[in-house]
Structure formats: C-alpha cells, structure tokens
Image (cartoon, rainbow, N blue to C red; front, side):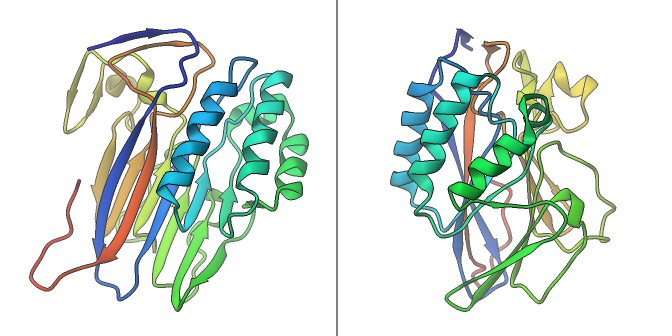
Length: 244
C-alpha cells in the first residue's frame, strides 16, 4: 500500500487483451480525468511518452481535462502533440463544463480531435469497422465489427439491450482511498458507488473503469492513477473470452 500526496506525474498502464469472435484487430487507449493545473507539465510529458510507445490505433479521451487556466495551457500542449494521430475522439466530463466547455471544444477542433456529442462515429481500420459512441448516442448502431461506448461517468445499461462489446468510463478515481479490494470492487468506495471497480463483465460486454490520471484534491492511498490500453484480438478456436 502506498500514500501519495501532491500532484505526482506517475501512473500505471493497465494492459488488457480482449479476444473477440472477429477477423480484425485494433488497439485502444483510454485517457481520462487529467484535472490539469499549473503542476501538469510533467504529467503531460509522461502521458505523451506512453502514447508514443503504445502507438494505439484509437485514442479515447474521457473528460475532466482542465481545472485551471494554467492547466489549459498544458492540455493544449498535449492535444497539439497528438494532433497527427488519425483517430482521436473525446467526450466531456463534468469539470469541463465548470471550466468552460466551449473553450475545450474549440481547442479540440483546432487540434483535429473529434468531439462526440449527439452522434456516433464509425471508422475503417483496413476493412475492420469500429463504431465509437457517446452517452448521447446510446444504442445508435451501424454494421460495425466492434462497438465501443466512451463514457465519462459510468452508467448501468440493461443486459442484452445494447450493442457494445467494450465500454470505457472514468470519473470515480477509484475513490482515491482504497483500503481493500475484491473482485466486486474497491472499498470502501464501492459501498457508495456501484461502479467503483476496475472492470466488470456484463452479458457480451467488457466494462472498464479508469482510476484517472489526475485529481483535483491530490491525495491517494493504494489507488494508483492509470491509463487503459486494450488490444482487441481475434478469438482463437476453442478459447474463451477472458476477463483480464
């Protein structure tokens, strides 16, 4: 167990291999809850180094990017650095409305980031089609090989009533203070928030919750900040879909 106090630029990469009964493959990097302020420069440098190393096909930005004006400058540096990536998508978090959602959206447009609001977006990765939706485009489907729902705050969906194989969310930060962990979640936060867990398998869908890359209140205990890297691979004959 480890106590972290202050705006530390360290985090873990949670690597998940996700086999599906599909012919194609892709890699997805989910980054959420930066909460950038004047201390954010080192975090941005570290995140960018990991992005370069992982080289994902798709980057998903899960909201809560900026807490202060100084943090906005660091966020600009980050977005400008990944502007050359072909497939970068973003949604808003609650803190983005506190800071100024129009400023956030304009910066993303300037850096060629596709901001998901009321519709889903579908991309073609050399014949492998991936659809990415936000909460405002729930259940909107095309004939995609892989359907992804990108959220900020985790929500419950009716079993069998949605088309998604992968769902990403953040917002909860793992509750920042974790005294013990079970397959059901991170405690004591799990008592207050149903989705205070690392991941869950629901019906045909893997639901992954990030603990975030930053905090407004910089204190954590046994709750490492993280980014999520998922590699989707074809399901081998006779094997089962894992819950890594």
